[in-house]
Length: 266
Image 1 (cartoon, rainbow, N blue to C red):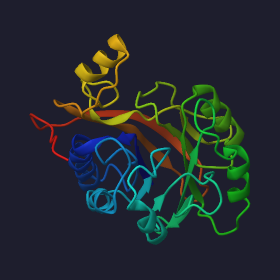
Image 2 (image 1 turned 180 degrees about the horizontal axis):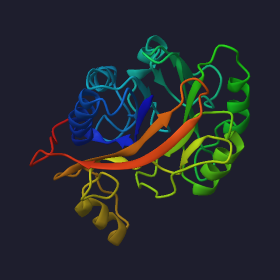
Image 3 (image 1 turned 90 degrees about the vertical axis):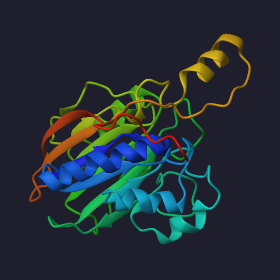
Image 4 (image 1 turned 90 degrees about the horizontal axis):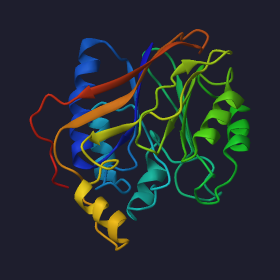
């Protein structure tokens, strides 16, 4: 089974290139299942029910979120209904939505877990203990994919080793900068510290360089618009043994849009 896991989709440009590339990869048979981090789809901050459905229509099988989950108020009710959208499982008890889901595929059930880090971030519940509790369940799929949405590389690395052999893959998101440390860990789990970003590449993690530069030079607040120009999809493709749930390989990808200009309207 070939699984595509996509780094943070940013704004309309990210949605556009995701739709373009995912259609190509599924049509060619290069991927069978797609997990996309889409917490920045709504102008770079959060997601709406309409945009979630757009990402699903474009090819995603499961959407993961992160620390921007609640930026769009209308998402709360949708998360209670949307079984294929997962926000971090270590949010406080009682939050809308779910932190993990198991969905059917042509290759059997696939479980996707979302976690958020605590280092240099808000005081969420422990992602390590939260993962332990979920993995005790008997109703998970043989294939288990984890998205750890975290700032600190060390926290992601340690969690990867902590879960090695207990999940199929653990991938990092949030920093929007793709790392080059993809590997199969000793006990068969695929790992990468950050998938990268799906959006405008000539930017500051998806934002217009002029406004970000002005803020850094002056210290004055500025509205960070989504950048224009060429867009790229970043992520990994996993080759998974569906009988054992172990990862056979992990390949880092960076695919540029074939279109001349990104869509920038929100």
